[in-house]
Length: 327
Image: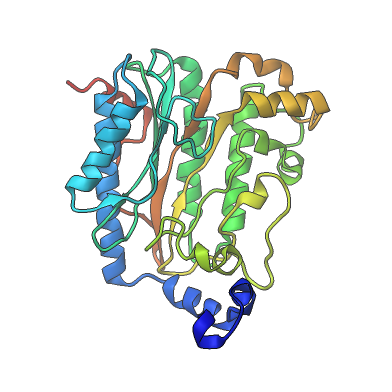
């Protein structure tokens, strides 16, 4: 481009055609039947990766052993991983690619991993399971909140619905569940409006999926997930929402709520007295070593409602525990 247009290399980004970018995004956001088939293939392989990890995990194993196992499944299916595998007992660290920990009884393993097909379409799935054969009572309570947020959010991914509103609905479910456990308090609508829930849910609910795991975002996230009349928030947590615009038939996206107990963030907010009207900091001591839980599926928006892509992947507590007891 520098040679063709005679523009200085440092000026190329600013010289990009916004009109062309928007046209590309407009076309590529709606997936064809052939693309959906390829994404579905990637998701099904991704599911096999996750279920293999649930079956194979044992106390005393290194995270790296499980990471290597699931990467091998992606390669064996004539593809690759769509992005570096996230697999950690420290699930409270978002985008955690460190695999040096040892699995121990009582901990949770958060796995965010997806396959990429030979046609370069991506899957992006997250599951969380216990190192032990079963979840603890505390883990079950948090898991059920996340699962409800995920299932309800998927049901809301309908044509014409702003994904921003789906995200805020998930935040309200999470805040409500945490209030029932005594970890949050007060007016939940106001808590979510001010962003108090982001202590536990500090990222966006999802993003577009296709030829890249964050589809087309190299063109500019604001063009993919937002519109001229809908701008990104500057609020902590909400500003990380990659997709906010109204959904259209043919969109493929992720739905991935989570709850995390991040000791450093909890300690910082408590020291600052932040959102003390909404957060019971004294109740969080028992959760500082909890880690995190995220559950994620890949969704096709259709005129008849949302469709979860790929073969079903173990997700309920009973389904996950059944795989953890697989022999």
